[in-house]
Length: 255
Image (cartoon, rainbow, N blue to C red; front, side, top):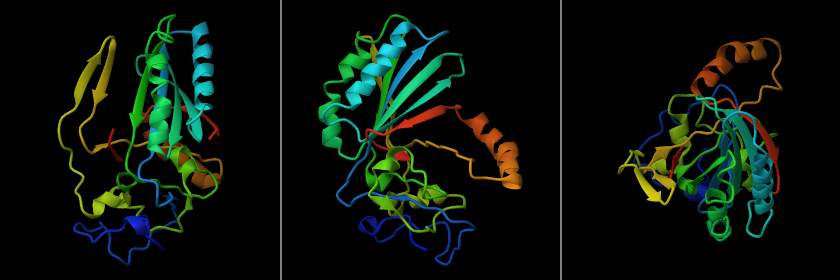
């Protein structure tokens, strides 16, 4: 049993875990381990939104961002999610991941204006970007198996052994290295910056983003029945339902 917090990010605790040192979780779980030199990861969401049937411009925009991902300094991995939001609009979000913020900034400088400017807006489409750049000390991952890495964890150098900090209330916070010394309280206020026809939302400090992916393909009989009847409906009620296609070319946050 090991800690979710990697050795190079361990600190003298001023805030204790919510479980004793001899806590034994009821089932195994694992976390992604990044190289010690990685200071931040980047998760960049490039979204398209439209009403009704997909206009012809949608396919062209999706091809454009896929080609941009393959350019110099592009992401090592990206995936795509499709969902219908609460007011009936179709959304397609291409999510790209970096573990080198400087490479992302070089790449992003030539992409941002094209995506949210006039190139793809119009013809029945709206576009948006959400960029999150958490330090490795202020984010966490959790997996119930080692066989299917998702999202930014695909950039990790490897995976941990079985970890202690899970299967209890507050486990997510305890997996965040910064929680050793910080209560992770929100600070400041969100703001909106207007840039022509674009609006940029800047959140307050220590906002929490949770991205959850569920895969029940390995479950059988009573376990699958319990998941589909008891767990999945609650998740569906609390989150957007997404259909994801992963492609390889590759919660508190600061933005």
